[in-house]
Length: 154
Image 1 (cartoon, rainbow, N blue to C red):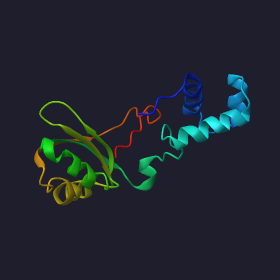
Image 2 (image 1 turned 90 degrees about the vertical axis):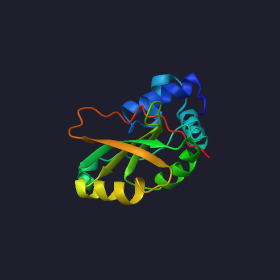
Image 3 (image 1 turned 120 degrees about the vertical axis):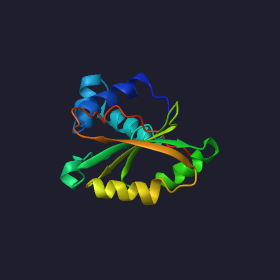
Image 4 (image 1 turned 180 degrees about the vertical axis):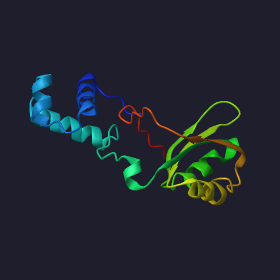
């Protein structure tokens, strides 16, 4: 993971609260020039410390159904599984964990039939999957995407 300076952290925190803030507004708050803010942001993007994009309300895209999938995956098959499952657009989060289930996925789709189809045809059929369990997400009361760390693995 890329280490960032205290100045960069302050810039990112400001943008996490309001991503529409201008470089000039950020610069004024921190006490540096707006060109310096622009350079810092470009460097953060180049090093992969931040990504610039938009976050949609998934329900507005017709994605109204979600599930958390816990999987027991053969330890020597996790990297192969990562490559296969990371390509799926409906997998919105992928993490390795401790315990009986060593992989956790968040899957967001339009309805339960699509969830079952993805599970049966793309996730559970992988040869490294030993066991699975899942929970259906009924209601999301809080979801903070601004604190999610982004880490690309080669």
